Amino acid sequence: MRGRGNGDAALIARRVREFLDEYAPQFLTTSDHTLKAYRDALSLYFTFLQSQGVRPTALDRTHLERPWVERWVVWLREVRGNSPDTCNNRLASLRRFLEYLGSKDVDMRYLHLESRQIKRQKSAKTKVCGMSEEAVEALLAAPDTTTAIGRRDLTFMMVMYATGARLDEVRSLTAGQVHLDAPRPYVNLLGKGGKARTGYLLPRACRIVRAYMREALGPGPDADALLFPSRVGGGRMSEPAWDKRIKSYAAIAHESCPDVPIRAHAHQLRHAAASHWLDAGMSVVEVQHMLGHEQLSTTMRYLDVQMQQKSKAMAILESEDDRKKTKKWRKPDGTLVDFLGLGRR
Image: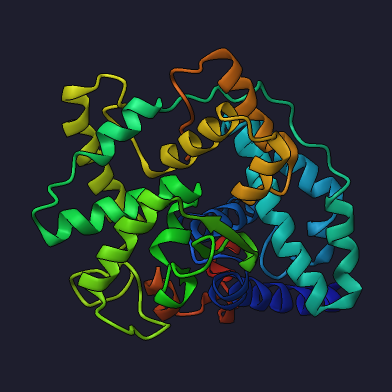
């Protein structure tokens, strides 16, 4: 048993690093927030094991089995005071890691299967709040379109609202994903887990995107050219940077339209799009497809809110330096969390 434990410890540590530094950013998501959620969940899991006296030399696969995971969820709720939704999100992140672990090491595949049997924490229905159509129009009118940055930001927010896309999906768009000359203009969106879907552009949005692309990218842009590159370095603007810009426009728009949340964020444009589609008669299943939701129950939240608060549409949801860090899992001493390279950064 001790020999297998030692072998398991090194293997688990290696898989943690591979999952966080290679697999998740390449195959699961490009969102900094989601990548941080994976790291935080694993850090909290092994912090829990550490608090239970599990040392690096004793770590083995049994510490990833269902009884330990269930105790961890209780610890999250009762010791750390996490909400049911947070516990569920942490559990989902751990499951992703266990799924990866099982795909690499077949004799550990049972760990993921066991984790799927763990019941989610019951939580109250999420209250969703957001923006009316008038509020969206006020927000879109806020950028100064006499400037190149203002025209870029208007186009960015218009694409988010027109397609109901996630922030990361829009900031990652390339010229090759935009098809303005199709009979029904559209953009190809790459969502969570690399899943593709289509977001359609109505005439007004199409005109704005076409004018912006002509100005910002010129004729015949390279298919891999970012649609909304940062003006510093030309790469993708970070999610916090976009969030800050949207909040600045929300503060301006709030002056003329109090319906605009003064702390509005990008996801509220996605929520607003969903509620307005439902209001226009689109079925909840169609909206589920448009938003790229895996579970219909997620989309149903929009329907509930749209029925109860039509005028206030939707909701508040919620680095590369990591790759340069020393891989602490190589060290045989120290705490369990440090052994796995999950020390707080």
